[in-house]
Length: 117
Image (cartoon, rainbow, N blue to C red; front, side, top):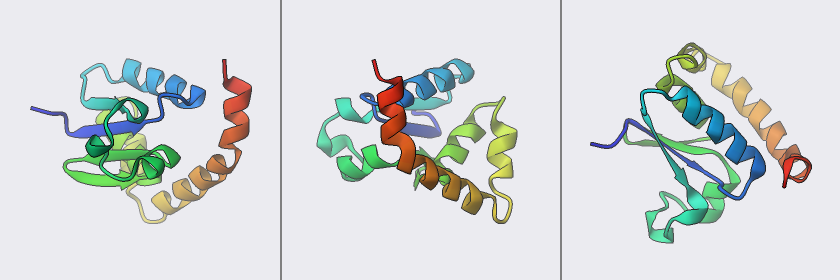
C-alpha cells in the first residue's frame, strides 16, 4: 500500500535536497513517498516534468497539489508539522503562504547558486 502523501522534488536543486533531507528525518512514520523528479521516467510524472520541477508538487489522498497547498499536505503528514498544515486550511492562510512561496521562487535561482556545491 502506498503512502497517503507523495512528494516530488528537484534532486538537482541544493536547496530542495536539503529541505527534503530535513523532511525525511521528521517523517519518522514513513508517511510520505519522496520522489526525485529528475530520476524518474517522463511517463511517471503526474504533470509535465518542467512544471513538476518548477513548483513544489504533492499528492494527498489521490489529489495532486502544488505550491502552498502541496507544502501544507506534506506538513500534515508529519506529526511535528501537522499543526502548521492544519493552520494552512484556515481562510486566507493558503493564499498568504502561496504569495510567500511565489516570492521565494523569484529568488530561488540565486539561493541555489549560494547553497550549491
